[in-house]
Every structure is written in structure tokens, then in C-alpha cells.
Length: 164
Image (cartoon, rainbow, N blue to C red):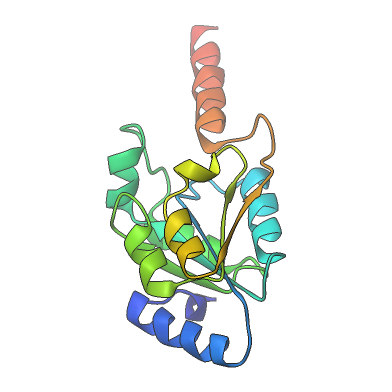
């Protein structure tokens, strides 16, 4: 499983080799903190768009810069290992930036996938991917399921128990 977690330089070489053999490279990114059914369905749908799914995983520092103070809940190493355990995820690389544009520019995926909750004009890297002939795909998200919602439910449940 850990062989799926690559440094960017190693990933770029793997992607080049796969592309030479005719494989279509799909890229998506996210925090994937507290993996849930929404993540699993999203990643499975992303993988179905091509031959190889590369996931850009926000580092702990990156998550702290874009999410509330209590995030991430799970460390980047553990989040990467959980993602690597999914059969439809081929490679994971961890990035420190607040957005994946440098990663997208380096990997040059054939297909960039984000959730349908993002408007295409708001998807980081969409213009870059389309400029070289790639495509952008928005996949449906599971309504009512997100890490933030799960965290709120846990907090609410524990606060209710403490008040009893």
C-alpha cells in the first residue's frame, strides 16, 4: 500500500511512463480527513473517468491553512495510508500549498475531477488542464455527508451526553 504514496518527482516519472503506454491519467485532490462514504463514492467515480487515479492530498499544514482550527483530525501520513488502501486509488502525493495548481501543472492530468458542488470556473487548474486539451469532470457528491458535518454531529452528541 505504501508504494502508492509517492514524492512528486517520483510520481511525475510514473505518470510519464503510464502515459507513454496509453493510459489516461485522472487527478483529484482534497483533505480526505475522516474518510467517509462521500469520499469513497467520489473517488470511485473519479477513477471511472480514466485508467489511473492520482490523488493530491493536502498536507497537515495545507489543511490548517484552508480549514477550521480543529483540522486535520487525522495526520497526513494516516490519511495517505487509508487512501492507499482503496483499490481504485492508484497513487497519492502530499502537497503543502493551499491549492493544487503547482501539482496539476506538474502532473498534467488528462482529466481533472472535482465534486459537482464546485462550479467549473472555480475549480483550481481547470483552465490549465483545458488549455492543453484535457477535460474537467464534476461528479455528484453525497448530500448531507461531509467531514465537517460528521465532526459537528460528534461534538453535538458529546455535548448532549455531558448535559444529561
